[in-house]
Figure 1 (spheres, rainbow, N blue to C red):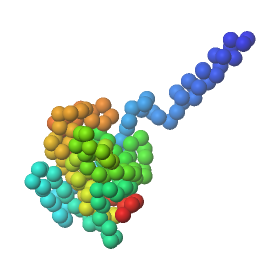
Figure 2 (figure 1 turned 180 degrees about the vertical axis):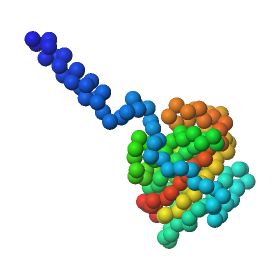
Figure 3 (figure 1 turned 60 degrees about the vertical axis):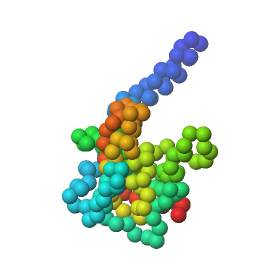
Length: 174
């Protein structure tokens, strides 16, 4: 009888977990992500010397632009050039923006100070946005993952061009 009591609790926990609303079996899904922005409708487009492309669809409002030490709240979806989503603020049914706390550039090895975990192209693509702005950034491999790592959610993003649709909700620390 005592042995049965010890079995009931773990079995109940396993049963509850198996009945969760996560129908993906622990895998990430992006079912609620919006369709990609159409770059042909951009009102402004530019390409930096290093290949970073920015397409602006709707200019933001407000007195402030994002600078490198800001925290921001934004919606985003990252895709590969074939349209496959590899990361998004809309993951697993989420509908709210995410907060990024540090847009400071990564410092050189051996230096001290804040370090942004964002890839360089993504970080630079957010700089200069105003609240409410919608843009697409196209990040060449040299400003993305390059040859260094496999990226997010099990995707191998080495040497891939990455496309992010961004919508800035607000600047948290102007």
